[in-house]
Each structure stands twice: as structure tokens, then as C-alpha cells.
Image 1 (tube, one colour):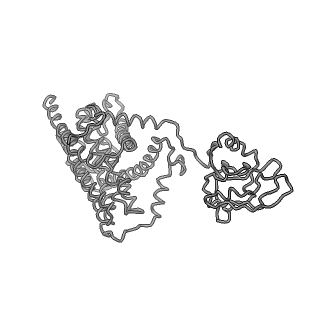
Image 2 (cartoon, rainbow over the protein chains, first blue to last red):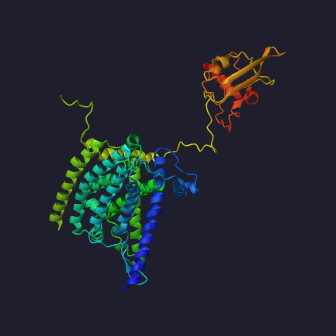
Image 3 (cartoon, rainbow over the protein chains, first blue to last red):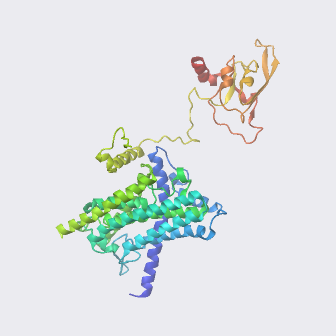
Length: 342
Length: 164
């Protein structure tokens, strides 16, 4: 393989993924507002563009024109660094999640993921843990008590939920006996989806994913009624928008992870039996990945507007006394399954 | 100290959270497809009921004369001091009429006391809620803006007769 081919392929793939991510993020904000409106018997934004279709761009234009304020008491360097960190982590995590089967284009075999890292799952875990720093930095450097409380809550929450998240992934890794995303997806062929084989692990991972992305019912870091805006109280303009985008990008990553680990990635059960031939099978498989992610994103929004926020001690109770033992139980369950059926 | 028991302890299924969460999700999902309550304001306008207290107006009889006899009770009772009345004499049966009648709409708090106190049913609250002015002078409504034909106020007058 010539070096230029690889470079061009990677650049095209990076641009494709980034564009899709940015567009999804902006329309996810609109979707959130629309779905929340419908759930509350309202109409939602419908004035800009066709039925509100251009609302995200109006929002961006507004945010760009806002004044960027840094509070006097803030640590300037960290205050500026935090939103960049948040958005960098949010967008670089996607690199290892495959969104389709290998395809052949212009006589080359192209893998539909940016990097086939053989410890891809660890890479995602490591980067999402780094995401805590962005929020903690933001909270600490703002020089405001509300931000600080938000930052502290966030670090405590994310660390406790990472434990059960890690153990739930343990079950998946045992099934696939590999840490590579591609192998994990291939191990879930047919109806052998991990969500069906290990439902406890699926639920613990799902709940932890909600906590990791700071979404309701676990959005304590920004709990509006108590903490004004939580860690981003003192942010305005595009810095605020960066946090906002990072939150939604994290939702996409969490959905991608859930699909990859538990819902069979791009696999559609028994699609080979239909005999559709080379390009169509791959197209349907790639689309199925996006459909699954789309459903999960809707699920995230749906849950947010249905369930009230947990109290802080309830959150910690749930994390350490329920989720952690359950994820351990899941590992035992997976071990038994492997013993019995292999 | 013994832990105080709740009236009804959660049973196992409720303690698992998951079925209860599913119930909640089902409810919100159903709501998504129910008809919306939003009124798209400039296109669709809210039609208030007769009990609505909108802008206070003076009743104008079919003959074109206002009912008001300029007794000044409304001005006296107004808690926000929004009403100014200056009386004058007239050849008509009622003998007195307001030469000047002004309501400062920036002061008005829509309490409806003027309407309650009026012996002649001459000042009533209308259904008009679209009050826009671009400067303070515009906000002082004189007789030209306050007089409304009695035909347009039938709802409110009937409501007052029934419930006042």
C-alpha cells in the first residue's frame, strides 16, 4: 500500500466523521428541544427555516456574537483551557468506534473506522475519564462557588460510575476475548448481541453511560435549580457553546459505545441469508448502525424529560451499592455462560 | 430511635426502579402524540372569556355619548392613581360629563376596582390585552381611545349583572 493512499483515505474518513459529528451535535440540540416540547404538549422551535430546521445555525450565530466574559476571580489559563479540553476529548474519542463493515472502493479495502486500535475499548475509557478534567478545571478555575460545587460533584460522580462501567465492559471483553472494537462487534453475529446474552451488564452500562455524560437523571454537575449552571456558570459565548457541544458529542459517543458493545455494532442479524450482494449488504449494515445510534440518542433525550433528578446521596448509593455489585454479578454470569456453551 | 416507616413501603418491583421507569417513559411517549396546547400568537389569538380583566374602557351609548357622569369614584378608588377625571356640565339629562378622562396605562394594574365602584356601569374591563406603546406619552389614554361602543361590551356587562 502506498503512503499517499493511506493519507488520503484517512483524511477523507476524518473529514467525514467530523462533519457527521458536528451536524449530529447541532441537530441533536434541536431534537432535544423538539422532543422536550412534544413531551410537554408544546410545539418547540418552529420559526427559523422549515419547521425550525435552521434553528441550530441561528443559535450558533447568536452565541458567536455574544461577549466572552472571564470573571476577575478566575484563573485565566485554566478557564480558557477547560472548554478546549472538553471539546477535544469529546471529538477525538470517536476515532475507534467502527460505523460499518469493511467496504471495497476504487479497488482498496476500506475499514469504516478511523483507527483499528487493538485496545480501542481502553482508549475510549481513558479519554472519557480525561473528560472529568475539563469539567473539574472549569469548576475550579471560574472562581465561583457554584462552579466549584459543580466541578466537585462531577469528579465524584464520574469516578464512582466509571467503576461499574469498567466492570460491565469486562463482561463484553470476556465474550469477545479481545479489547479491539472490530473483534467485539464480530463476536456478536446473529442474535448473539451482548444486550441479550448479558442483560444485567447492559443495564449497568446504560445507567453508567447516563452518569458519565452528565445527563438527567444524573446531571448533578449542572443541576440548574441548585447550582445556577454548575461548572459552566461563569462561561459565555463560544466557550459555553464548547461545553454544550461537548456534552452532546459525549452523548453520541456513549450511544456509539452502547451500540458497539451491546447491540452488535453494525451487524444486522441474518442479513447474509437475504443474499443481497456486496454493496447493498454493507450499506444496510452501515445504516443499521446509524439507526441504532439514533434510537439511543432519542432514548437519552426521552429519559431526560421523563425522570426527575437524583439526590446526591441517592446517586452515590446507587453507584456503589447497586451498580457496582450488579456489574460484578454480570461478570460471574458471563463466566458461567462461557463455561456452559463453549 | 426506630426508623419511621412510610405509609406504604415500596414493594420489590417498585424497588427495582426499572418497571417504574418504563411506566414513566410510556407515559411521556404517549404525551408526545397528543394534541399540543401552544397557540401560535400572532397568527392565532387568544379569545378571553367574559370574566377577563383587560384594558379598562368607557362605555359609549348608542347615541354616541359616554355613560360616565364624572363622579370621580374610579379616580378615588384607583390604588395606582392611574385615572384622572375633570367634570363639566351638560344640557343632557345626566347633567355632568367628563370633560377630560385619562388613564395612564403604565400605572394601571388591571385590578378592576374602577369597574366595581362605578355606579353607572360606565367604566368596564374589556377583553383587549394587546397594549403596546413606544413612549410614555402614548401610554396615557384619553377619551378618544377609551370610548368603546356598548355593542362591543355586551359580554362584560352581562357578566357584571350576573356576578357583581
